[in-house]
Image (cartoon, rainbow over all chains, first blue to last red; front, side, top):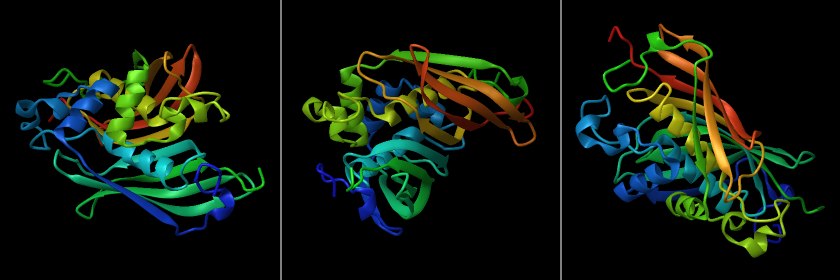
Length: 143
Length: 143
């Protein structure tokens, strides 16, 4: 571990995994609309959202993506590492009341480059709502 | 345009572009830490952040990514369209006080699939801080 309790690149191996789960509330959607300025009616206007394929308001996809950022930054590889890249495929809607579990799993460790590639997935009741790949720059025990 | 003032797929052509700009404040970083639960010390703890390569607190990369979501959802292709996928490369830090401009530009229009692919870039004072690709599912004037 590095001095701020994150993983050094030498600590990581394929298959290591960490999760973070959070219930998305109407308050989260409102706060995220405010901070992102994404005020699309499908997130905020129930009368309109009912007329869409979603049948009601949904959370912002990028709000769910933030939980991937959280598990990467807080747990694996954790503090002291730097977020380099992320891919995101939005697979299904998240609604207020849904509990989202974000899980990252180490796929590849590039020790010389101090980079780790992780598979990232967010699920609601076992169903995939978001998936992608994360790339982090890690500390080294040799730094 | 569709009935909620977004672009139908038939309205789009390569080169069309839209932007959204916002000054990131300490309040944004605090709100985003709350809503995402990404509480990495580099965003919240100046004493710690000073010891990192960044030399002080930085905004969450995924907070900046939200401004891409905003310009896609609010402007181009806008209301009525659905966010399918996003890639993100975090190129440089954003700090409280920085004004971020998120710009999306249509690269490819797949009319039969009702999909549009856009280049997305976020800049601060002309410097690229985040870049990626967005894929949106659009409405059609033939729906």
